[in-house]
Amino acid sequence: MQKQLLSDEQVLKFIVDGYLVVQPKYQNENINEKVLERYTKLKGNPGNNILPLIPELGEVFDTPEVSGALESLLGPDYQMWVHRYVHASGWTNQHWHKDCQQIPKTNPYICKHHLRDILAFYYPQDTTIELGPTEIRPSTQYSIADWDKHNEKELKLTCPKGTVVLLHNFLVHRGTRNSTLFKTRYACKFSFLRIRDPGDEGGPSWNFKSCPEFPSNDTLAPIYKSIWEWMTNSKLNLNDDLDVTLCKNQLKDNKEKNRLIAAYQLGRQGEFEFLMRSFLNEPNQERAREIAYGLTACVNQIDAVKLLNITLKGATENFVVGSIGFIFSELTIKCDDVIKESIDILINKVNNLQNDEMKYFARTHCCDAIATLCTVKNLEMDYTIVSKFFYDSIQENDVSLRSLSKLGPRVQLSDMSTFEDILYKSGDRYRIGYAIQTLKRINNPQSCNILIRYLEKTRWDYCTTVENPY
Image 1 (cartoon, rainbow, N blue to C red):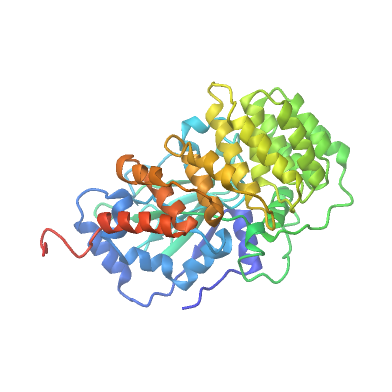
Image 2: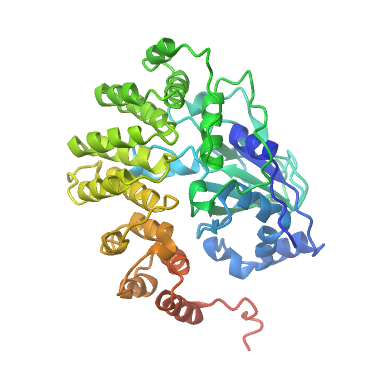
């Protein structure tokens, strides 16, 4: 069946609110009951193996409504990630949290505002207030420092059985208390990743017709517009009445929200030289981080890329190097030879990072930047050096595997034996997941041979059970 892509209004709603409720139409009318029946027979929580144990879950995410929504938000090559879990409501409320901020070694965290990761919650039963629904704080996906203060809008996601709720990976949420004695609320959590940037895809991936009306009374509108520009590879009209001087002063404001809005407004206005000076002169890392977001909003400005190159060459601190890598990874850039210079500078920086607590931060964002720049549409280059640069470190760094996956068919490698070591010897589900995804994306005879042989040996036969071993 044909996927049901989202409308312009639905995509904008997700950008603004950070969530979307999807009501799939199932061909198998008993699918929800079947999922519940299978799950309640399991011993313990199978985690990532929930999908091969309950293959009906795959049908949920293959429905035209869910697959169409995911393609609309993440692009046609989106990937189901190897992080799956079934959450059962407990006797107390969970603490408010963002899934992205559970990883300590990424601090100081710069969360990606662009749509790169989505959480999908599937509810196989009717979910009432009494059962303890998932609760969210809409529009909190763009805040890092102050998100725990956004308590003016809280929404409990009550829903009929079969519902799928898509959440921005950085949206604040929690599970709430189950007040019943004998019933359990299950939420099957799946993760999905964007593989290619919108500019590499050639256009919007939803049922795009025109730009809808942005919320006129929402102060975060500059962020929404910047993300819309990234997803459509376009440039919206600027606000001619913008007080640029006021925005520059607001970069020093005490509230994170005001600083962030000012940075985005200045970035969209083309004030990249001022923003770069402000970033380099800002001693506070939180405030410098918000200025970096503003620099990502400089759409299709090659002069901004040239300035980033100059700044990166002279940078010595890992925080500065990593932040510039982050800016590069989020920019919307048209093809230009200066991009090749950016790639060379970034590779050199990664090879010469200081060995301190910020090294992981710098390496992660710089590698993301290299992979992003290498996939700029119409860029012509020899990918041999970049492929080897990432391949030589895939044993130690997940980000190198992820970057090779982004390069996909551009990868040029004569030897792929390290992938086999990761698949059979690493014992790391996420590293194995990245390796499988990367081999699939490379899609040449060598990568397909490694992948198929591995899957043949490790395939889970859901038909075989203790009761039915033959």
